Image (cartoon, rainbow, N blue to C red; front, side, top):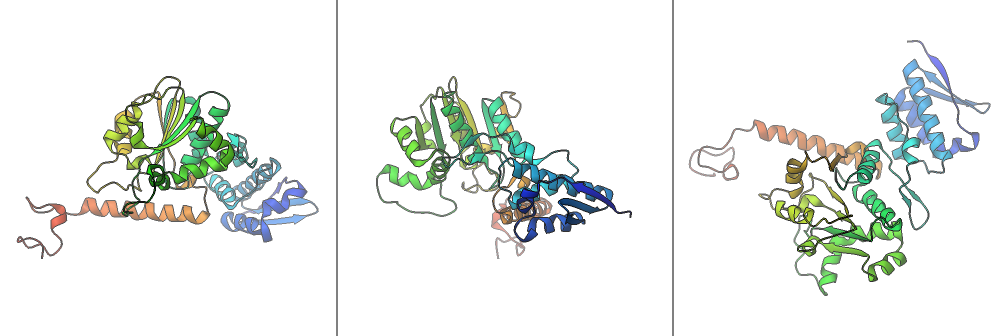
Length: 348
């Protein structure tokens, strides 16, 4: 295999950001793409096979452009740039990063980090109702919140309404102390956290007191008509089909709706079907409704979260295939009432 040399154009003052602390990003690029990177006389030269050297050059220049735009380079950026290079995709993370939705209270820009997130943001802009479905850490709720706050600040809507079903995550918490608001606040805390980070607590408090921003459990939506509002339903996998129908029929004129959920993390009773699952089947042919499916590639939390999501996806796929191959129970016996020790006289 013939080796070739490619030159990557990276501003000298940005090499430290691109290479990472102790060159850890650079070493990762070399290891993943099987190339050698040499820096000498203000030049960054990449040595390897034709495709590998070209891919590494593109990754390094893409990260350099990202740093030049003022963005902090993270391990997630490096991992995603490498995945694009390995898939030979003609895309760049610096291009995605330029699509700024808004700025947080501290001035940090909020933008998509992957093409899956970019498609999700574009769908929110172009459709009245958008479903964002995917695993934890893919930015479903955070990007929806950023879009809602942007629309509110631009006076495209007059209020923001955020809701989620008040269901415990697999454990019974019993009776919580305090008034009604104190009882439901723990279920809505993730929505408050995103609001505080993007809008700032003072701005949120001021608008909440005026009734312009509302965070409420899903049960409060019944009987309402929501006009000229940006409405976010979070954790939609925990709705029943009746609740989902009730929520979607609240939408009024001038409103925009985002429904987010992860079908692999349902907290409903075992025999209850998710309203999100039913909605995907029932509404998939309506053009005005967008369905965006995010994957483990779109996870933007700690890289370990991406590995955890991928491991669970593999496990659940294997488990699902095993269940499909399992022989059914004898006639008249429910699947849960027998095991490998069944001999025709009940469970032994």
